[in-house]
Length: 246
Image (cartoon, one colour):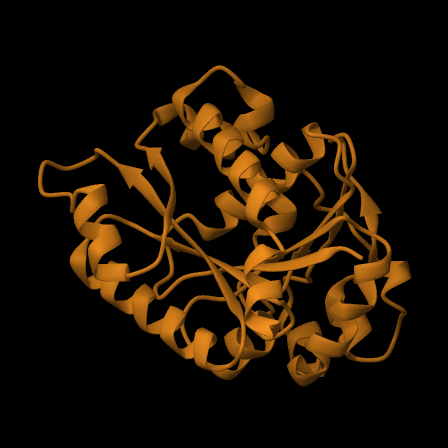
């Protein structure tokens, strides 16, 4: 059975969607069958980042009971990677029932090795429904104290809800001399630091091109960091869930 992993953060703009896309493609490169799900029902961006902008059927249609989950799965240009996109118009947002997300996404467990869920930031209802669709959580934060503490709070709530917290990603490190150092961030978060993604202009360049950096420039600093993250996830995914259930 596959693993359900949500990508979560305390604030918007941390690079959560970029992390979801690059992690998905990196796992695909390692030979795993992956489905990335855009579960940010009001601010959908994953489709654009992964190069699919003309999807007819979306997660919104599934949540509005207008389509099955199978109808919403699209092959991407990346090896072993599929995508369930979200709609970007308000009409679809109004019709979709976010409370159906957990049961809907769990149907994917039997079809994929990894289901990577791009969740909304924070702890509002849409975000909680997306994150509770998973069994494991990867938190993403920037190296700023307010962002770290907000993300830490999300982790505490999700852990109390019974999810296994894999660890966190410190994203865009090195853009300011005031950045919180990785060791301090790990001490504040009180969970494992799985990756430090450096501030790398190539990542932004790749995003503008609509191609995640692990595919756009695999030898760049950012791409190498995401590949290392995927390798760590592959080693520990499922382990904490088993511990939590024991």
